[in-house]
Amino acid sequence: MLICIFLLALTVFIPSSCTSRRDKAEHKNIIPEKDLIIILTDIHLADGLLRLPRINYIYSSSDSISPYIEIIEGHGYTKELMDKTVRYYFIRRPKKLIRIYDKVLGNLSEIEAKVEKEIPEVITKVENIWPEKSSFCFPFPSGSPDTAWIDFPVSFFGTYNLQFTLTVYPDDESVRPVCGIFLSSIDSTGTEKRIYFPTTVYLKDGRPHRYNIFINHTLKAPLRIKGWFIDNECASPFLKAHFSVDDITLSRRIIQR
Image 1 (cartoon, rainbow, N blue to C red):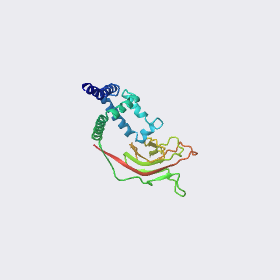
Image 2 (image 1 turned 30 degrees about the horizontal axis):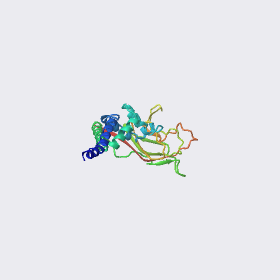
Image 3 (image 1 turned 180 degrees about the vertical axis):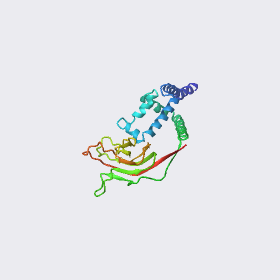
Image 4 (image 1 turned 90 degrees about the vertical axis):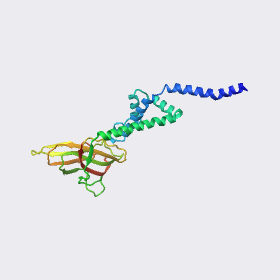
């Protein structure tokens, strides 16, 4: 009877003991929890940054996971080890994985609170001073006027904030569609000085993207805003353009410290 009980105990505890030893051995060959939390935090931050059109464009020609691999390797580990680590926690320690993600979310909340505290309060005037149509498309519908060229006077000094939603369709033949809008000031001798809005390379995927561009200037009046939403000064007239712009607003930003 005692022998039977002993054999039964072996069948119950030996697999568990082996599993425990195997678990400990595997745990030594994964990314330490402290480093894993930092890596996952950085990956979530990168995921948010990649939603910005300018950042997305930088990585658009590379593999979709290459930014995340760069983060992992930047911390001294490999993608294979990261995969093994996540698999280990997902299969063997799922509750521990939840606690790790709780710490990641805590880190992200702390970063958000710190950013909100350090960035000065920004008040943007509510009124929209954009005098043109709030939307247009190219090519233009039959019978409609050509509205691709922008040219109107402005009187504010300081910082302008231009926002718009732009869709560049896949059949657009622009090689590198960028913003071509600039501030223009002509002095008494007739010499024009230009300050271009920051070059924003647009995504050409047929989906609408919201762009938010700031420009600061100290040009003297008279002052005008000119140009194209997609710069075609250097484009060939034989290339097909196909895009639409909507919800255009122009305002001046006031920083209150």
